[in-house]
Image (cartoon, rainbow, N blue to C red):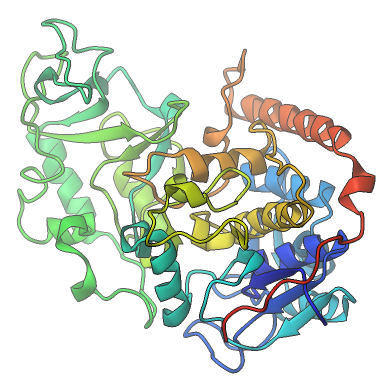
Length: 480
């Protein structure tokens, strides 16, 4: 079959992208290198194999993952349709039988008249319209080509992720805003007596006794077991060590490291604390803050227990826990639009591809989203927009009030200097105008607003135009 669109990767993002394009009349060639070349994580040759867990997260619409699933169902997602046919009992979560789910996706993709599945490794950037959804274990040869395209400084092969908390869950009767020595990121200096409410960081001060208790808990906490193909302890970069590894170097290692209190005064006492944990703004809206220097490999329940010992974070709501694991992802804020399209304009003359012959989209974990459903969601948008690019139609962005729109906006607009992968959470949505005080009430209001935003968006799209037959000539095949 001649093809109009090439999709690289047969995971959740790639199969979703291929399905969306094929459903709209495009002829798709989907490349999956398994079983000819296996990865260390996969065990079968099935498409959309669930590797780490069979849980797809909460299915409740007033939870962030559940809201994202609701949106995907409304957008006719293949992954959601197959997951719904392979469910196993899991209360309010969506849990699927791994084998039934992967088999359902494989059968629907392979039987689609507009999709050709090719079991080969792709080692070059395909010409024409293409979606790169090669996942966290992208092959070395394809990764080398992505580096040529984006630059080595924009492709990462592992995650060193610090936890993120919501601003509203921080206790400001203890925590306070201040920059070290009162110097802000823009070079201005906080005036004397104006520490409270000023500064680029939120600070959680510790006394000596609080610090020692925290260290005892941290050193005694249980760490997650890394898989063989992931990082070993001797592979961590010195400049980004897990906080528990730093703590083992000496009792005061953190007090002289990421928790050093120099240049900080506690406004309650007017004195410098023994140690301080700093939180840095993580999103444009200022609703999320990451715990600076606290990348960690502790198990999630242990993080929940230990990090709540930090004064001011005893009631913290964690939208992301820290992680240290093998991953491949690009610096999307520098490289992608919220449509998931690659920005040719940011690449220098030696690395550019001709927009006249290439229209490249990225999707899945490689763009910096986390979770099975987040991967599929970006694949859905990439596949939809790849079809529009094929026909020279304007590309679309989903409303930022929707969870999918907010997720794609986040990965394309976060600070590129500190960008790390993100999962669906209410903190990335635009703030509510008049939010209720209770958490569940706010969640319900976020969900209601997202439903309306998605309905308005769908009403504005010409469905007949979206499903028109392919009009472009077939594209050249990718490099073998």
